[in-house]
Image (cartoon, rainbow, N blue to C red; front, top):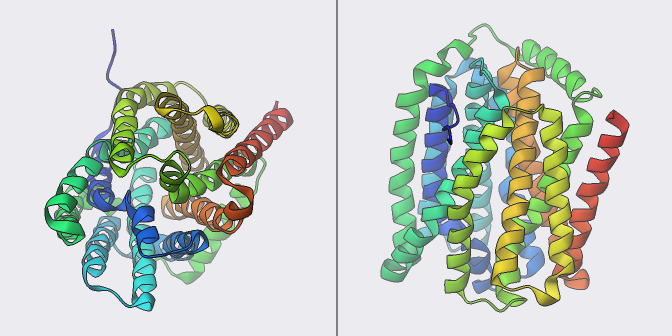
Length: 393
């Protein structure tokens, strides 16, 4: 008989907030590459745009980690969520190219505020099983993906993009209020009014020493390679479906929603399994599955159909999900005495990998093509994963 995976109160509340944030964002963001192409952006410019979103997360995460000692992390997370709402408002009115790019930077800073603070709250909550807890947290995007595209499409059809941006604005401000009301008390123990710049320097020095150790760095490199490939998929996969497979926008919408709906029961099973294995094993297994299926996807490009694209990408998402949850669990365990800095370092991995993946693939996708990049990214992940497994065996 299936037993529902265990979830602590703080994990439940953080996951719900994560869901509402991404639901409000994904009602339009899943169409973002198509939107950029409609504005006559070249493929390299699409890569630049994603770089401007994700690079500020990397740069501002350490600062947010420091602020988490001084300001209630629930408040920082709520401010970050409000930034998503302001971004949606800017997308209605901003036409100037410079202001458009500055809006992407604002989105990146907002994401840094939310994700560093949310991870710090989780890592500072003495979780019974960090891998399982972050499995819940990382499952939120798939819940949002299951319903957000359809809701977004309905509003776009009825009211245009302005209508969906207004809806996003309303949802984000509701989410900000919900976040602060639910997580305020749970994050108060993290506050340290006497914390200063010297303490921050010492903490980060200690953190980097642990990250560079043989017990963390090799596995972090596997996760980074998985995220690098995720950057390519995030920026260009929808364009691949449109340009290479000649799918219509309606078929792309059905595909995205179906992937997420099917992943929901899979995620519940995976969350249970995450709690049974060591973080290191989860990372290696996730990397091999994600990389291997990306190679298969690129190799099968000439004979792909809707079903094969669906099955292979479900499997690739399984690998990525397990690998990322394992990475956060590993960092949480090794840095449990410094949750603010751990939350900042963990937050750096995802945007750094995605930003580099989107940027570099945007530069080389023209001469190399989609299929070769799917294979190349998968081979990279498999080589790193096998090397780490062999060295650590």
